[in-house]
Length: 426
Image (cartoon, rainbow, N blue to C red; front, side, top):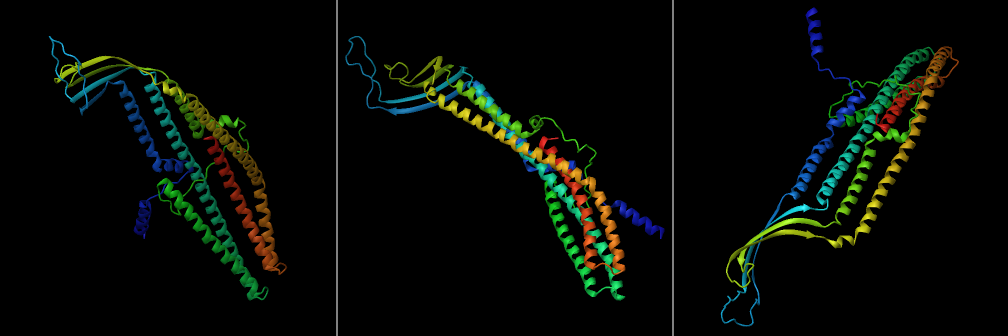
């Protein structure tokens, strides 16, 4: 017998134990498991390559070109010199040219381009951060949804036990002729209804668990323990800090700032486009004819110097482009104001909810105690035949509902607190 007990205990110890899940662990695992996290590295690599390409514009730009042509006419000297003769220029001409250009001053074009690359990359990263941040809210809703359903299942199971206990009592009374068979059947119907409700609740809990499992990349079975967060923090004292200051930690605010920075760099780059460009160049070639058009032979030639270019047509659209950037910047400001406005509504909503659930919880225990006394009284009166089975069922359900209400209020209070934390990124 001792050997059997030892083997059983050893086997139990070797069973894989699942770690208890907290909401913070779920959020961390969901972040690590979410496919978009890998996008950060891709964005960084993309920015690095684009910056590298922009920097290479400072390197000497080398080009090679060639052509072979036939033209209908060539340069001719319309008279002859008695002492000099000139070769006749061929109508078929050939040229291969290599050219090197080196930027000396580009009016800040390359620097502006790199600023835009950096700003655009920051926008994409912040968009990604916003999407990943919203993942926290999904985890909150699922985690507390599972907690709420599991507590509802516990209350439902207690209700079934209570109904079954009273069914035994009522069956005994029916056998003794105190109550009718209809009273027994009424309790049986209530038990069936409670079991159906239990099946429905378990189905909902399984659905929530499946969604949470997919998000965190870890299987959660019906025996997995989810730790209820602590309520030690003072939920009665809602923070009185300025909401706009609290929201500065939200990734959406950083996204708006990154977008405004992009418009600033685009404006700067637009101004840079008005300046002339100065560069050095060297060109070497081989062909017929060379620079000496009067010599009809293949020859090498070269030319070098300093070059200035100024695209004056860029001034045509300067005003319109500036106005478009101003409109885009104002559009971002409107979106930011709308974000703050909507979150101010949520802030007041959560504030009211936290105050409401704290007040409700103050009376829940007293209501449960009174409902329990009423149920006990009804059970005693049923024994004496002074109360109907319908009234007893009502009192049993009322006590169970009071217990369920307290559980709901506790979890809804926690959810409201975590909704507030999500709002201000705590």
